[in-house]
Image 1 (cartoon, one colour):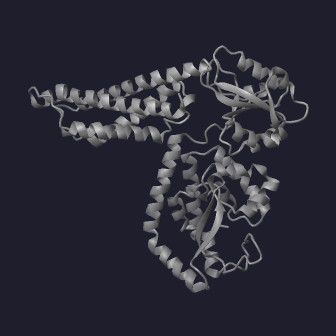
Image 2 (image 1 turned 90 degrees about the vertical axis):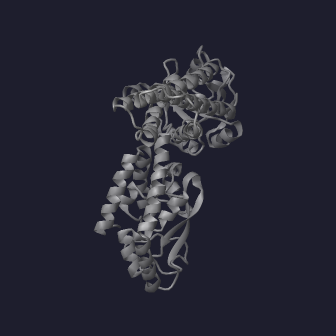
Length: 471
């Protein structure tokens, strides 16, 4: 069964569960609640409200599952996770349905509201989890029986690599790894070849091997103390969308870095499997859209005034467009109010400073208060940017930064932002060295991304704007 067919099975199961739960709940209301309310038996008929709900309710539930990532990593699901996810989404969905559709019902006593809520929750959760449990159990069994596997490459060919290869291959219940070969880091780590595992190439060829062989998982089998190798390998894997796992040593285990996902699985460190839960990514994007729409409407008049001031202060266009590099390394056109004189970069790309003579008088004020960034709400609305995220840079400066800090490519995991932790700490970078120093905070932001962190950064940004002490 391929991914598309399995996802279709989950979607159909969720639609069927929602339809059955809604039908049973409708019959419960007709057979139990309405006779109590009216003091007489009520004929059970499937009216227009029932059929409207039969169409809209499943669509609503599908939307919630898409928002929380309920159809992602479909072959890597397990039953405990299915239970927790179904329980959470059932609570959220039933609360929404209750307040939107059921709270205005006339009932004999408020106790019947509780009964309605619990009945709907029980039916929805029970039917959904039943279907999902059956599908997930079948998929888990096929993974354990090695019918389904994930193309896996071992990085390193030393004794640790041989040991983990033998351990995983010898497990009676497979975790899903289908080893296709190994990549050696140095000339001496080729012991895996004696186990019959082919050598696919060297470390610089890893990205090409992943693309050509459809690799889904990489297990790094070098000593975790070898930070130089570890950093090179992880940087090489950045942007490949493979799962990265590292064989831990006792220090990693004692420090709490190793998290168990299966009682029967091999203990491994998974490198940042998920920056944020899918539902938080969906909510973050929703917040971006809502805030951008509101900002473009509320700030329309101030932005018109700023546009006039920019136009009158110096010859040239009101807006400044420039190519920047966004998520997944894709270029886009960033838009700002122009804060410099025209043809400010006739001698090639240059960074500005607080005393830069190219900055216009109104531009100096706009940059200090961050008001030159206001048009970027349009970039956010289009999906090029987010409210909070690492600041996007030009390809020229990215190439310069990566000479000193190859891990800069980690920033391309997420959408760039109007503001960022690095922006709050440093403001506009005046040279590549400051860009590298600011990078530390942007990496920390990505590793600790959450809606709560975004709110803190936005709050500090607003304070900077109000105080007018931006750099």
